[in-house]
Length: 409
Image 1 (cartoon, rainbow, N blue to C red):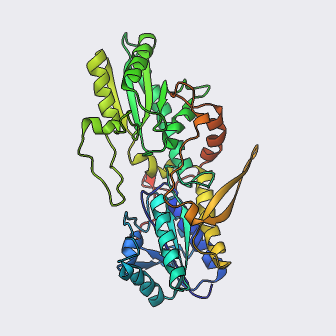
Image 2: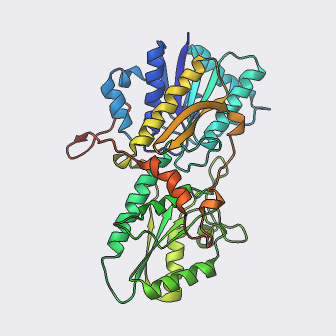
């Protein structure tokens, strides 16, 4: 590439999204790109000409390695929705004006569904107006709901954290051998896709009995059946732990969290801000059964726990960033790098570039064949798929007893 490049991050961060920035930087540096800019707070910051020079942080291997060990979005994220092109051409022209000002040849955007929509619209505008600049998507989402790609960077580390936390919660809940059990409801992120909640199934092993039930948004949530399940479990067990997705819905289409609070906030993309499902269910159980209950909401811990990140996930996040640059060098634009599984024993995964129009705004659900007939658990098909994604660890660098992070000035 003759010009400079810029990389940005968007949407909810992950434990490994910074590894993708490291991958973009490493590949661009190898190709001899002159300037590698970072968008400060994604496309929203870019529209304000808010850039940083990544050489300031990543010029040596120490910076890259520390970035891999840093959670959240090092460059800063945003939830800015690009407007429809018609009637808002000035917004798009502003993007190209800033690209031209800094001699930026290609823009790389790491994110999920909404971020890929930004890549799609910018590449479409460039094509329609004969602009030479190129746009590449770098996949990221703990929700694992991007289509086409086998899985999404960020998911493996979140799944590893969730499964580890579930094991610890079960161990804690089993500590008290009282006459009546404590019913613990663990709320897990994922919106309308149950991939993250499904990872609770990975806690089961020779040293852990596993959760007693898993409720995914792919199945309609039946309150009466749920309560019946809790009563049956509590009649025979001294500990009950249930994993439930924040996005479970009842038959009329309402989220369970809306049953407690109808005034749910909505973000720029029209997504309802979900929270409170576990608290609502725990309260209902206590009211109907008199049992002791506990609600645990893992919340942002699921996406911030870099200290327990999957090494497989870190390496793949780096790879998709790296390979996005190679694809752009070949002249590709309006595409996202996808992960393609080539084998399970041993696990092998490669990458390729795929048309962004087939990916943006499409949400992938957990396959029905991986959900048990009663809708309350996952079978071996999910285990075979997910287990390789949580393998391996990268030791944090500790300072004063805590993990050290790379911080933007």
